[in-house]
Image 1 (cartoon, rainbow, N blue to C red):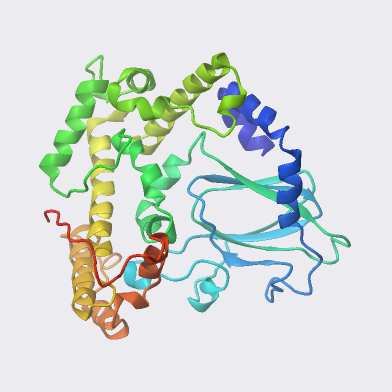
Image 2 (image 1 turned 90 degrees about the horizontal axis):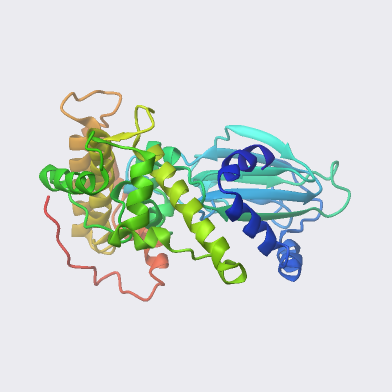
Length: 381
């Protein structure tokens, strides 16, 4: 926490100060919350967990950065990036013991966090924790919270195909929080794979933002656009649980820091050559990537999970997008799955309802919609 937040939040001192001020008034809340995080010394090892004392391998539903603060005791962490899944047919339960059953647990890191230390991790990281009796003769106490300024946009962009196949999209709708980093829109845009329409969207943004007409978007131009455009009121809104407890002057300062952070995050998401600016081609590339993934997601989620015919449609959709966007015209064997792979999927899955992604989607909708009555919307191919 000291290393990361002292660097990142140093650019946004008012946000940092009001957050700390607000948290100082939450003693009662934190006493209760800490109670939930108290763990007794376990009767287990890293290879054999005791549910009463440890956290199984899992991925939490966090769409932004997470901080885990250890207040007392020592906790051992193991974690890994959400494993690559090729398509919706490979989706699996990512909470608790699901990753065991899927045989996908392969931790990349193992380390300890002691009293007064914090650990930060981005969305999509699966983890387990263990409280070792030899290190903890008494109960341990820890707390977890999230922050979204700054945002891990470069990470999101680089792993977007993988994250779109995870429960962060299918169950938690995290992509609704990520979309504006390329669209600069406060509302979701209709996904399309028509390049002419995507080029028109990017051209429209450049016409509004590129004030010096150098065909690049820089930090100053983005801050100006987010500060003044009628279409970016969403970026200027100061909506925190502590907003009403600070003065209007503080709120204005928070708003400015928020806009500066948003502009920096937008550049980070789209700037592929790391020159500190966003070119037309860079914004078009990120817009295209997003729309391909989101277009496929929308086509899949409209299908009836109990229909054998729609199960075949889903397989056809996955194969079509694989052939066009993953495999490509070069048919590179490093990326192409082959006919045998898709035939094996067809034999293995009889109904989409068997797949974790559709179970997550149904749960996210509250379980009150009949899967036999899917949406009947249609986008162009």
